[in-house]
Length: 219
Image (cartoon, rainbow, N blue to C red; front, side, top):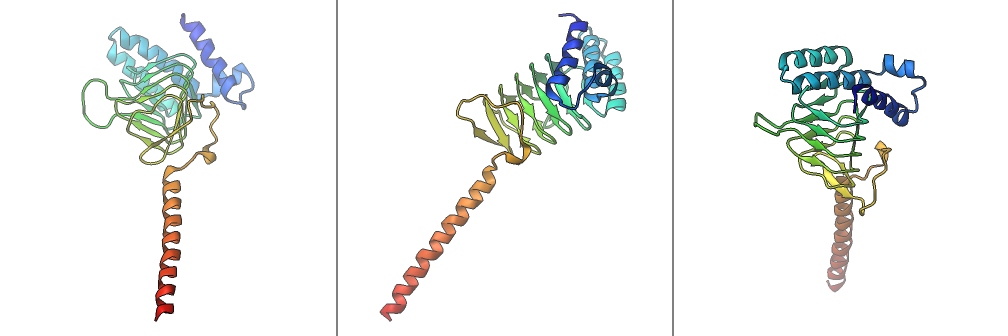
């Protein structure tokens, strides 16, 4: 597929994902996420031809103007959408599939100075919410979504939701995860665990009170 057709797809996905988008001129001139993606596509083309310095220069210029840092070595699929985008970081060995959406403050990074594949693989139709950190050579499955502020260090199965620090998977019974993400309605496994512990403690207190009552009556 030619560059122009890919660029047109990048514009169209903005209208699909952002209800605030109004006109093509507005989107082309004011959407920093779109600018960062376009700059990356050019930088990545030079990177593949081993013009590493030129590719990195384009990447850094884009970072300066957009606040979004995408290493030119990262592989990004079609219809990639960055909403708002400030503070997004995407590492060199990242692989991002088609129809992926990420929000501001997301990091797709490494966990140290290891060599080789050291950044995440994000499969098709995944969504990564505001401030999430996905670290290491792990895979985020298709149709999965990462909750806002989560820190993900392990593989995520297809059609799953991850929340918390460290990220915990909430299985969605094999059903396709909706693309829209209600940040405030995501389940919190840690909260559920603490709630269950509190319930058990209340039950133990009640049982202990009954035992004490029996002993007092015997005396």
